[in-house]
Length: 530
Image 1: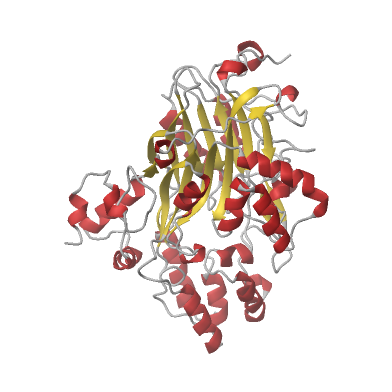
Image 2: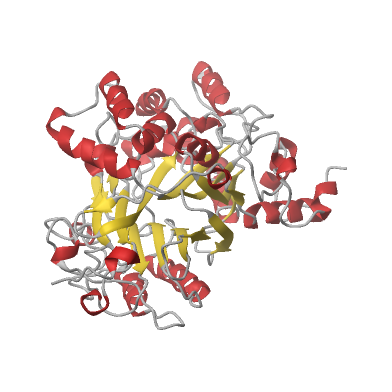
């Protein structure tokens, strides 16, 4: 009987999901039981019925338009000089670890400031900027989110996308990127092996989930005050096999007799065994003010554990997939543009993936091993001081390498079937900071290069770094230069909200939210860049 639901159509009724969702869903795949999750953790070729159920989960979005059914209207914030706009925010929310802070930041500026004071993390010198950025987030009508959990112990088994949508009164769509099935850190089926028996027992307890609540899902979400007409998941070319490669690495560690148990454990927690892979969530949003009546939101998360050339290949595949779209398009998300093979990381971020009390386990790690044994995947990125400021910079062999530039070159050259293209312009009149240069109107530039969105917190070996990983690419309503065609849905006033993100101790997320305003055509066509 367990496989009976697999004969149902791909888009299944909300009734199948009623046990775990209070928000009315139009589409949702059946979830895997704990026993089924354990089964797919053991092989990448499960039995046919289970394989079909897993495939359905990985290609069927969870979609709800309940907010639209309740009559919720968009905010349409007014941008000075540009009239009413659609404000879009993109944010990698680090799984939703700090859910309450994220919810307050997006909906309740006063509540957020009270919570920040309680946490003793608010910095008085940045109060004006923080308050301004809170207002920007509150008025956003479309949220593009990366790293969103559903049914993970580390985030209290929340359905993060659904719970945020309910709190913000927004429609939402969620797509599964990975099913987390590591025997040790996710499912708690493997014995923790440490020299200290008491610590081993405590960590085993931290790793062992509630089998009735564990769903093991991690993905991307789009929340919108505009109705979501349709959505689909597009799976990107594989640049890192999160199942076979990770399993092989773990096997090598656990059979290496030269390692002490504690050192094996420190290396072991770098590994993540997952089913699935990187993807883009493509959602058509109904915007009545547009002549086309619709805009497409493309929520993408590119691979971190690969070379920049493979990220460029993933982006090329995505561009080919959306080439025929004949209306405005917003591509947003975490592109992992570090210029390196492997995103910046730290012991803290690795522990946060597994356990909630990362500070306690970090202190223990200091006792267990040497700095050489800690997971420091980006200790010395090539050309760091140039490329973290501007991943779009030219690649000059030997003297100025920038392998990430290929991705941006391809996006800039890309043309949609209708002749449209992404706005790469940088007109000082269209952004808050008077900056010119590539993408300055859709992504905030700084004194040099772009404002970084990712902060590598100082870890136990003393490393720290900042990178621009999160981006907007916008295809406006009208092709051509805005100086000639007007500003209808062309990007203006981009912001990177680092002050807000760092306004509490240890940050809300390891990524800062970014925003861009897209003027609606009823006013925008009258505005010209002078």
